[in-house]
Length: 335
Image 1 (cartoon, rainbow, N blue to C red):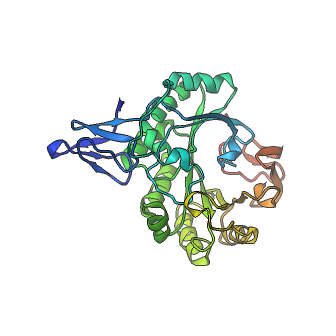
Image 2 (image 1 turned 90 degrees about the horizontal axis):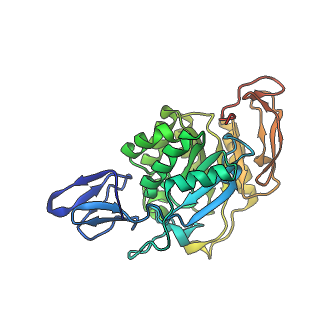
Image 3 (image 1 turned 135 degrees about the vertical axis):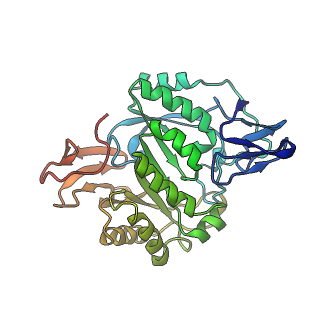
C-alpha cells in the first residue's frame, strides 16, 4: 500500500477522499467507490501504486488524440480501477475493481515506466485504459520524471478529478482527452456520476494550458438525440470552438451486450451538426476509412492530415499552420 494524496481526516478514524468529485467519506477498514483506495486506521492508502496491469506502445491516434503529436507513439499504462460504473465500459475487466481487490505480481517503479518509454522511442506517456485519476500517485510521479527527460504526458480520462488533483497534475500534464458522455441523466443512470464537474474540469484544463480533446461515445437510445447534442454543444462552445470533438460508434459490451451498435449514419449526422454549430475540428471514430478521420483546414478546406485507421499517411501542417493558406491550426505539433 502507498499513502494516498488528497485525504482529509475526520472524526472516528473516518477519512474523506478528495481525489475526485465523489469526495467519498470512508470509514476505517472500508474503501472508496473506486475500490482501490482504503482507510487503514484513519489513513488513506492507494492499493494500485506501482501495479500497472497494462503496458503497451500505442499510436497516439488510438487515444484518440488528433491534434497532439500526430503519428507519434505513446507508452500507454494503466492500473486496475475507476471512479465511474459505466455499464458500457469496454475495459470493464480492469476498470471495475472488486470490493476485495488485492494487487498481485511484482511492482514497477515510475522510473522504470519512463525508461521503457524512452527505450521504445515514445514521445509521450499515456495514462489510459482505465481512469488515471484513481492511480494518481503513480501517474503523478511518472509524469514528473517524464518531463525531466523530455517526454510529454497525456490523460485519457472521464474528467472527474477534484480541483485539487487537477491543479497538482497540471504543470506536468500536456494533454487530456476527456469523455463528454451525455446529459445529467446519462451520467447519473449509466455512469454513477454527474455532468457538471466534467464541464468545469474541461474549462479548468484549458485555463491551465493543457491541450484538450473530447470524445462522445454515441449509444442508441441514450445520448444520440439532438437535445443531448445541443446541450453538450452549447456547454463546449462556451469553452472553445477549437476543442477537437470526436464522436465514436458504440459496440455492445459489458452490461449492454444485448444492445445494438450505433448506426454509422447517426455518427456522421452528429459530426455534421457539430461542424454546422461552429466547431472547427470534428471527427468520427470506430468507422474505418470514413472521411471523418481526417483533419481539414477550417478556413480553406485543404486536407491537412489524412488518416487510415490509426496511421497518418499524409501531414500538411507546417509549423502549426495550414500548408495552403497559412491558417493557424490549434494543437501540439512539436515534441
